[in-house]
Length: 104
Image (cartoon, rainbow, N blue to C red; front, side):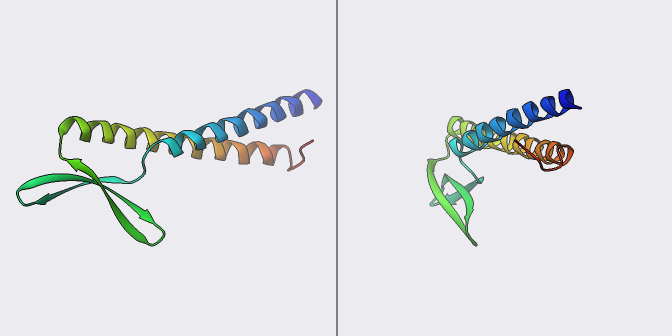
């Protein structure tokens, strides 16, 4: 049983490090969704996200397809990191259950 416990503890440490990595990566990318508004015949890009209970719209600039695609890619990457972080947290809970909450 000592070998299995050692492997579980190593995996637990690896998942904790991975969790910290994903949390840092998530903070590097913008949060929210793209909102395109038309004002005076021109289209403008805004980034919409929640801050507490309010929805905040940050002005990005005129609607340029390259900028919009780059922003979409960043938002997509953030969502992928969030999904991976969720999976890592589920795996951590499962390993902690296997270890019966005892860590040395």
